[in-house]
Image (cartoon, rainbow, N blue to C red):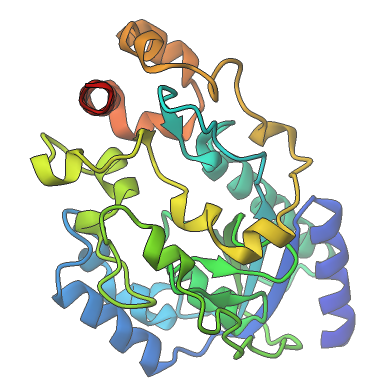
Length: 316
């Protein structure tokens, strides 16, 4: 079977599995991407996410992670299920965490796709990757023609905006490759940069995790600085501000038809006083198989307390 026919089989199978986007790139590392990663790490913009630097060599050079890789299949799955509540007393949770943990779903679909490929072409070998792997997902998606990296550092597509989960298959065969997405369609727009309440973007296309609300409410352990806790803007897990104001999302976002991503009951509209009553047992039940477990019960309670304090200040 030719590379073109193999590509067609992969695309059709991925579509049948529910993936929204697919692109294919040669597994060749560009020095520009590696330099950008190293510069970001050297400036400490990864904050306490030390695993980013521990496997930086693999992250910057896919050949060191999977030496057999010849092709990178980048896949996207639309997860948008609506915007957060505008009510000021609602504890806001990032859109991606309203449903089941995306890692489980994406990884399962990737392994299904890899299994289908290996069944039909037994000589092909590969591995499946999600964002827990040392892969520069957004860079590979751009190289595979899926979209471009916006000023808020998220991947943006013409047909779904930036509401996409990404995953990859690394295969040991050469395929027909897509044209990289070299256009920057952000233009002169700075909506995402202007809207960030913590000024987490020291410059366009660069995120300082130390100031990012998503990092602070999910990955950060311990207390928040007074300056930053005053700017959480109601978020108790994650943050979608830079995505919500993006014109590409406002215009082109589509509701996901993936049932696993649909919001859990009473998750979007729950006011802070109700969140305050959350027990550790409630946490285990409500967030079973949820990405929110990442912040742990103590982290979520800290965030709830901070938002409650901010709301009280604003009312006085």
